[in-house]
Length: 122
Image 1 (tube, helix red, strand yellow):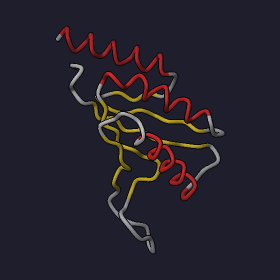
Image 2 (tube, one colour):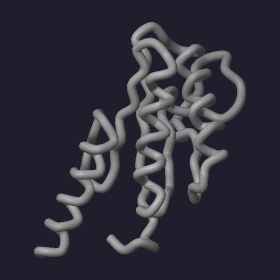
Image 3 (cartoon, helix red, strand yellow):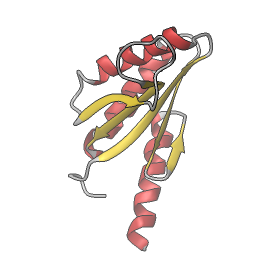
C-alpha cells in the first residue's frame, strides 16, 4: 500500500441500548463528525430496499463506508475510538482489505502494518 493509495473501509456502529431509529441517529452523528475530518469521503452504506412506509433512500442502519489515505488512518482510528467512548455501550467495527477488526487503535495499526509486510513478501 502506498501513501497515495486510498483505502475503503466499512464501519459497523453498534450500541448496547440502541435499535432502529436511535442506532441510525448515532450513526449519522458519527458520519457528520467524520465528514469534518481530513478524509476523502464518508457516507452511509446504501441498502437494497426500504422498510414498509419509510421515505427516502434505503440505507443499512449502523453502516458507514469511509475512503481515506493511509497517512490519515491512525487519526481516524483514534477519533472513532474516542467517539465510541462518549456513549454507553458503543462499539465500531472496521472492515476492509480482507480484515475485520474491533479494538484499540494501536492494535488496528499493528494489524495494518503486518498485512502490508505480508503483501510485500508476495
